[in-house]
Image 1 (tube, rainbow over the protein chains, first blue to last red):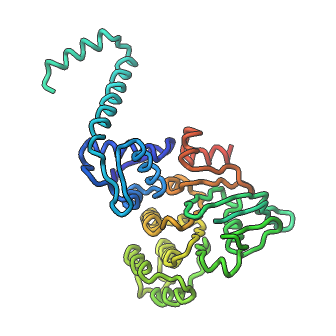
Image 2: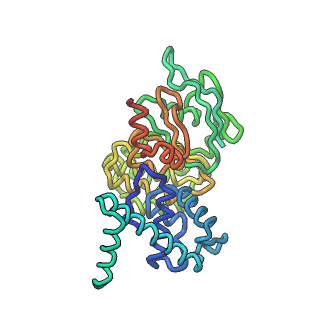
Image 3: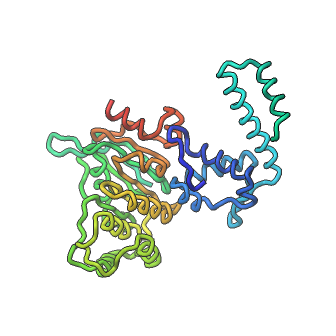
Length: 119
Length: 229
């Protein structure tokens, strides 16, 4: 995440949220999250922006925190984020295929073709 | 907390500041942006009591700007007034004695972080290193309010990166920072809230992420479109 380039035309805290979720799914963050200040310095953003992202992740039940004990991933959340990300990827994939003019039948055929290949 | 009521600063017939009303909570990190001559420096000077308003008033933690409020405010001036004929370590030592809230630990950390050459004469320093030194002098205090006037202008990219991360490292939650700049693109991710100044007035003010969401644009793009439309 340290080479992360933000899209400046979208709220930064939303991008930090997605980046943290991605790191959780990739298992780059296993339990403990970086400190707010540590992540702020790493990303070159305001600590309050990181704090806002963490706050929302906490409300969504993805992370937990306690003063003096840091911030950690809630294990049950992993499957949930994973599902969410898979859906996102599939949505994008289908949208791309639709946008170049494929209909549902053609897409199904392609998907069946993938089954035969090594995945 | 900083409160500004109906603030006006006029020089003869020229308004440098006009009709500004602002409330800045403790702990906010604010980008004060605007083109040259929009009143950024004047506003900071008014907060530091370098000049007096011609109308309206300012309250800092409930008091008007005075030596008393300045005891917990640090001002980073854009203009460089460091004595060239002093060696760097002497200058730091001499400067530190003016303040009761000088933090020797922070000073040490920043000397190392900025690679400050202590034995050189101040006049031998490049512009980037003078800026680093100036910033060291401003950040080494345990002040509550930091007024930073154009800390990035005219500085090489390497020093800029250093300056930005030093500010992010040293800034504490109970400290208020007002950071003025006309170079928005490189600093915009630093600002939790952005205040746009134009011809001495506030033309836009909001949480940076809320503005990005509302306009679907970067702060830099909003700045260019609003200011130069």
